[in-house]
Length: 395
Image 1 (tube, rainbow, N blue to C red):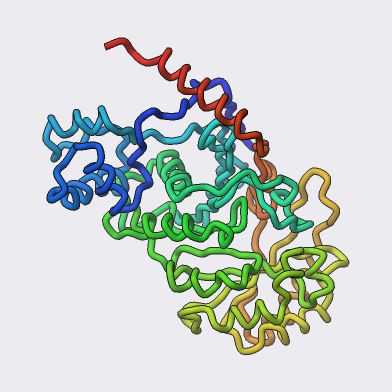
Image 2: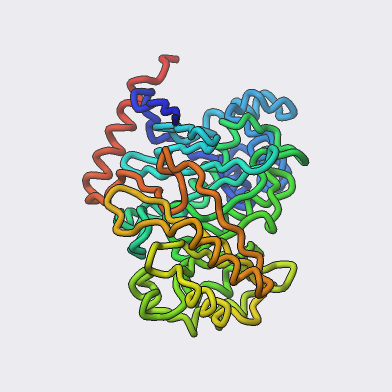
């Protein structure tokens, strides 16, 4: 039985009046220190490196704990900036150990983030890149939620920080990590938010901070073909393709983006992905939908489609969600499909469903955030600021 902790009555995380340094890139961090007058320009790079390690290696949220920073500087930093985490509205733990957090980035802006434990201590964090999604994939719960907005690099990094807090994994360990992999497979299409996704990967992969190798960071896309090359050039991340069909007619239905970038264009873009090799294979994700795409003929068509591409295929048993129009393929059908791929020499693991009981499995994520008028967003922001001022201690 899953465990749910309702944190909705926790103190509201009001929008901070001071800029948040947590989640800035190194150049942004240095520039912020100079602009606030905390350090002189000639010392900004050194001070930024110092703060970077405290923020991203040790996970600190309090300037006062930065023991190698002068007391006067710590006071100036605390006056000018904050290191506040976003509010965790709800934390759920599945009976299989999967954890899901509903994280409020700002008033009306909520995303879901999932930690999936693996064999031993290792595990993957599934992060979101957008609030909602525009793609309307018919098998995906997120697709029923309209796009609200892109997440910033800082908001993407904050998901990693929240997970590290909950897993008690600060400072960043070099070995025996619980959070060992990052997958951009949460809410949203990462390649429609590439600048912020790339910025977040730079922060996450930095060896003096969170230090998760780029080869352990995977970006999953439904196939925004023009952005495949820039993704590889800018991030050197591993590539995953949300495929799910072997012909345009069916993929047009399951993944409507296919109408804009059909399979011939998608396969050409994958073959040209920077760094693609036997050591850096692309992962094809294929959700198993009963009576839709799960026949042996479809498995053979898949082999023809990806012929010559260094790849593995993840077979994903469909995870139902409220109102979903599909059913999961029978287990024998999935095994028969995998056998066709295995005989052709492709690794084709069947992904074990994780977190189904808390709607944390692949394709089940959704928040209640909705796009609102700019005036309503400003009203909420102003109310949050007023509450923060009311709650602030009197000097």
